[in-house]
Length: 290
Image 1 (tube, rainbow, N blue to C red):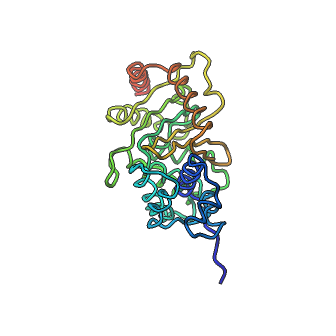
Image 2 (tube, one colour):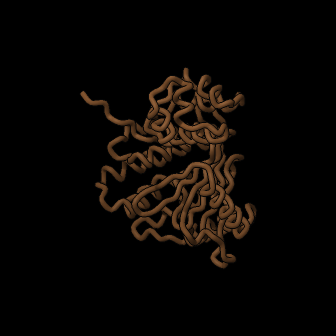
Image 3 (cartoon, rainbow, N blue to C red):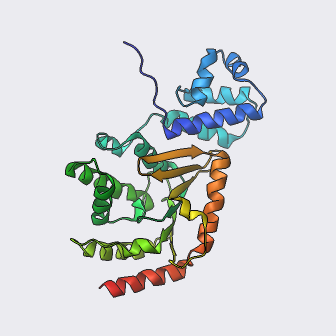
């Protein structure tokens, strides 16, 4: 039976990116590293392109070949090599969770922080069940009622990273939400938005959650280009940017892409209301809706 090629996952891409970065810093060719490791010439290329496995036991020797002595690099790469193919609770929903969505859940589980610009929807990590169902059904045009319900369950279950993660501190979330999102109407269930605003106020009290509102009369900022999220990782792992569109999500690790979106997010934050003013706006909206 033929061996199926490995599917690139966000962890494999992070691992491959680190290997490539360290190799280039060492001024070594892929062939030279593979020869020193006594590997087939194509193995290192497959690892760097997230289509090959790196045995955790080989990480220390590989770093030694490339002259890397940083203990943090060793720990990070061993963890990535060990967990590259692992899945989690979302595997139960494999019929509805696309690979790019599984990558998102993995990022939320592994990252230290996420900074999110959300111009059209309440961020998934802050949605109520009712809001999640309505948002998913309006965008997932080919999904059945049962699939929408399953995806809403996944979205709500994801939110546990804000309060508890195995052997990790809760995820730090900084979300900037466009004020227009707060004016969305749900004709059949008008209480959905009321409940959602109450949820935002509640989440804003968590020490690891920061919520800002982008006012309707804001100054121009780069957020008009669309939604995105920046995932922060401890050194030496590269940060990751997620870019959303109607067909799903795409990801980029490290480099100029992340720098571009990091700069854009800082400008977006500067155009948004302060944390205190944002909370005041949410409370005002809650009172007017009750």
